[in-house]
Amino acid sequence: MPDLKQILSATQSLTLAGVPAGFLPSLLADLARAAPTKRAVFIAPDEAAMRAIAGTAHFFAPELEIVEFPAWDCLPYDRASPTLRVMAERIGALHRLQHKPRAPQLVLTTANAATQRTLTPFRIRQLVANLKPGERISLDRLAALLQANGYVRTDTVHDAGEYAIRGGIVDLFPSGEEQALRLDFFGDEIESVRTFDPDDQRTTGRIDGFTLLPASEALLDEDSVKRFRSRYRETFGATATGDPLYQAVSDGRRLAGMEHWLPLFEEKLATLFDHLGHDALVIRDNGVTAAAEGRLEAIADYYENRKRAEAAQPGSYRALPCQDALPRRWRMARGRWTRRPRIVTTAFHEPESARVVDFGVDGARDFAPERACRRDHMSTRRWSLRTSPSCARTGCTPVLASYSIGARDRLGDAAHGSRAPRRQAGRDVAGGTWGSARRRSRWSSCRSITASPRRASGC
Image (cartoon, rainbow, N blue to C red):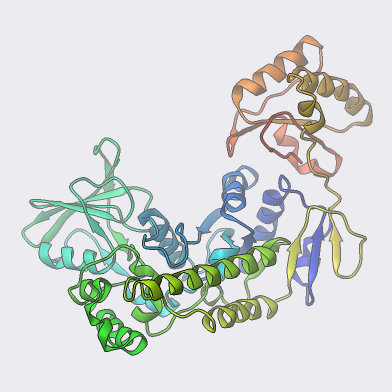
């Protein structure tokens, strides 16, 4: 295996070749463990790739702390807001980045999220509130605090960013927490803090306190509302004061889609790179640049469509101008990347050089030709059985990855019937089951076989 010190000490752009999708989580885990700051950042081209890595990295490094920073799950210039879960996940990730990691940490994000501006590190630290038993806060003040920080009041708490008040009991699902919390009040004093399962509402334990983070990036505190009102009038004119959005924010009410006017709420915005620091190890997929450029082109198209709709119906939707802001934002994000050595991963092989490190790992076979002939999966099993003796002669270990336990068992039965040696891994990874996975350290001598209609990769 190539020396990781060459990657960590790189002073110029570096391409990591021969890194297929199945090998990427293992490599990122090793880089996070070897990084001087114990933190590695990977930018994926889309959310599916990010989630796939997040689901498999723990298999290779159980001690690894994974921080996911997704993009908004709504269209640009939409009338809908990002979901509460996504906003809570973003705020929770930014809060975790304010502290130095104690264990190896892998930060995962996407091209869309990396080019999107968000709250500054100072703002994140400013909005943190620590609540624990013995703290005094009235129910009315707590409700106002939650409402201003983006929490939505419901009858029953089921998802992140929601809260409910029933007499002297407050249920809420804070950003960054894995479980919902139940606060018992005695007058204006928090008597206890318990965790509960949102599915059945049953208490699961007690905690000594928790950190209350905002549930949204668009906040409705007094300063933010004043700033929004002033900037909205400056941008769209005095006649815009009758718009439903302006009226709702002025009254302190949240309106669907208000996050798309985030620059009007905050004095200053930042990118993810401002939260990472200058010494973070940043790796990105070779498809990130094209994905980001495509995203910004789509934003410009949505903006033009909104402007045409506004010309037909004046005042229906006042979109923030993007002609100047988007290119400047993209140049700023690219500048953040280029201040550090640019490290890019690709599944293709390239000749070794001072700027290329080839790991020599091939992607797994997916049996597309066999499936194209409309054969059943017996062709896959026959092929794997023919491969096992040859691997035994050469000393390599075949790894068969199946997307379900049933598929794994069928492959195992076929191997058992042919008297081929068989070992099964008892752990599912991102919806898949790995066999002989404890030999993962011998990645250079393994042969990977994918035996499923869905993509899975081995060593």
